[in-house]
Image (cartoon, rainbow, N blue to C red; front, side):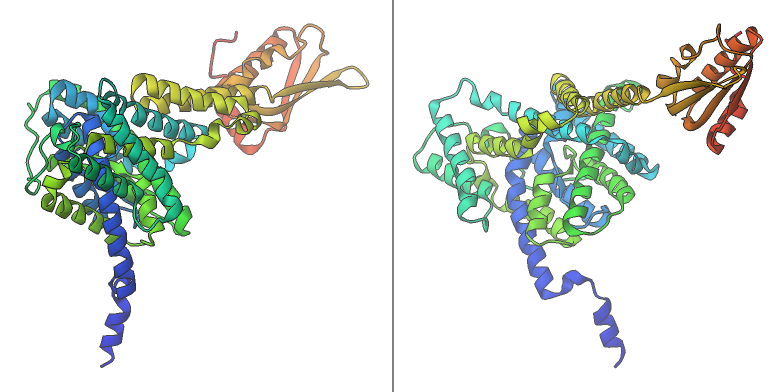
Length: 494
């Protein structure tokens, strides 16, 4: 009789009726919100809507089990669509799914190697630039659907935008994008307005996704084609997913396993590729919908994917009638919501150090120019490092004082000594006029690299050539170890 309460106490929290209801409703709302975005991102990637829909299904269901952040939603995203679009356009969908599989393998390996810990080295300004560039690329991807079209397309898109702006002020019980799609579709179908529809973009799925191996030649040439895009997919997917996991951690006051988040995304992309999906990563918008709907467990993630597939298979004919104008309106609102408007507010720009703004703008500019989020982030990090090194290099100072008897001169070096700051160090000493004894006091400095040891060697050599005795004092333990190991062994200063 004592075993029953113990069993009840150990059952998963989501089995309680209240939690189960909350998770199921959140999953349904997310599934409804996923449909238009999955279709839109498929079109950005240049593939059939089913490729994006299958991806959102397999990503969500796989991560319900393999993911490291409960309640986080992953699926086909704009960031991944932009990365893989050139592969689909130039080489076809089979190369795209091969890219997704390879990208997933890379993510799993990077996750196992602990790459999540490197996120701490991503400056905030690079993250802001990443988000802003993503918003710009999502917006510009909609422009082809708004050029050389009937005025009726603009009218329907305006109706959709109006609903998404106005409805949340009245109620947030129903997702505004869903209402906009239903109303715009109702107007277009009811009035018989001839505008491009989802059905015109490609065939919707009428069956479950099928497991299969990408039909590409298993050659080095294939690897050469897909590897750069797979690496970009892996890096962009990890960045978005880890950023989203960090966001949910803060919202729910819980901690997630970032290493598991990383390799879980890799596993999900491998599964997605083998099922013919376009790949994906964490979705900030859908995750926010899920968490704000009260979801806290993996059940909502699983149901979001499962219900998405049920809705599409059961209502495929209806989904095909959705005007592209409605989806364009949804994606414009996604772009507007994604952009960090605070970052370009005049008050923010006045207060923010110019170097931070430069890093953000460099990330945006390179990303928009190359249409590659990974390249933009790498350039942003490099610019941030260069500007940081430049800033820190100017914080080194050298002050000197002569002993009263005139026989010894003491130089006090203050600051962080590394390649950028120590290169000029050799010019801060008065070799020709100094007395017979010189003391270099490093008690307020830290030696970081071989460049600094080489500079100290050069200073010592210049003094010795003039018969001056040099004593270096005050080094902390780490600096002394580095100096002892390298001094006199670097060459090139005699």
